[in-house]
Length: 129
Image (cartoon, rainbow, N blue to C red):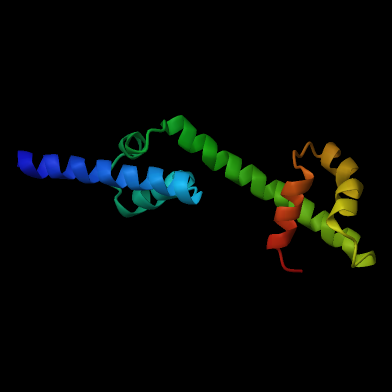
């Protein structure tokens, strides 16, 4: 039994090392998926508590719940911005993102949305009209 425990610990260390190398050498942001992994594990293995799952990834339950709330609010903000962009582009179909960003500034300030030009570029690159 102790040998199996020791092997499991070494395997966990090996996987952690592999993740570190992937992030440093190949710029693959694997650790950002920890919240999604916890969500899947929580649904598939309901007998494992959330505190234990979070502990495995070195985060607190509070951080887990805050991440969920941030995801919900950013989705709402993105929906608002995309709706506004579609309204603007009804009349100006070929308007670029830089000009859109300038026209969106009053709307963004009014709704207290924090988004920069580059983030707007990335968001609009992902949507299909």
